[in-house]
Length: 329
Image (cartoon, rainbow, N blue to C red; front, side, top):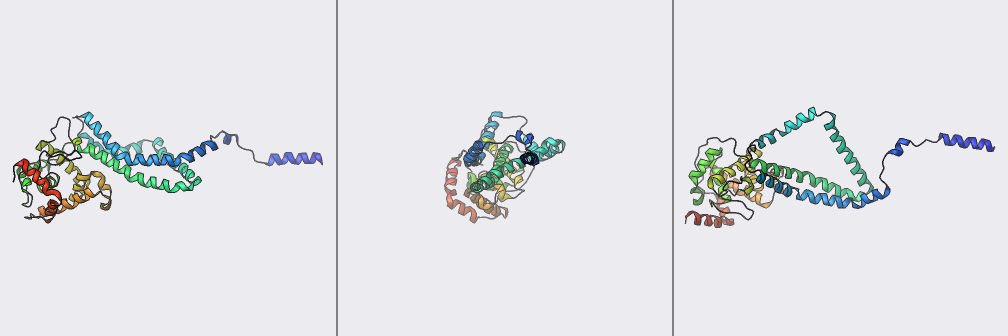
């Protein structure tokens, strides 16, 4: 019986599945490391969220620094063309890139699986992870749009066409003071003179040397990073050139929608990726003032209720300052 029992024991051991030596060689995280990761994961997610919130400002400052460092780079006008062609370039690289580039979706999927397993181990983190993902997509997209917009705005106007037209009679005397210049700038840069006049009305009321608390300069309140290092930001022709370039870019981004283009002019191209109710109050007011005044100007109205409301909301003080500089009572 003893011998038989020993034989049965040997057979039983032989029937048990053997652990693969290859499985033992797979690297595994120790329980201590896993506990450390799970303990500090909320901290890492919070740090990532803070970085995403600060990302637009960081990218904008970086682009501004690089553009000032480059100054009048001779290849700068080519930047918009490269950015416009970027999707086609990426598609060409993807088609010709072979299996290396096609590993990227797999790597992203693997990271998603790892994150999912971490969350399942601690279900209280699910809400935090979902919030981070929801916040990351729009913030990152807005940061990219703003950074790309700042690069594009540095380029000179590429498509000037001749236009004709006169200003509507509704604008304030400070804007009428610049009427001849506005018509010339509109013809030079291919814009409606009433649109340029509307922007000047809201931005400076014709004050040629005014500066905002944010640093915007001159007649069209153009930010300093739109100018090259050798340009006089307060020179009316230079200020109009850069302001017209910003406005033309915004019109292109907004598919010709004048209201959206003026909101873009005020708040940057990032507003175009959001619905109206998610805009800040300033672009919302700019959209209301701009569309109302410009709509009346297109109809060649003698007066504008929207312009009167803008004057009552604080625009009258701006126009008074402009009148003192221009010698208009």
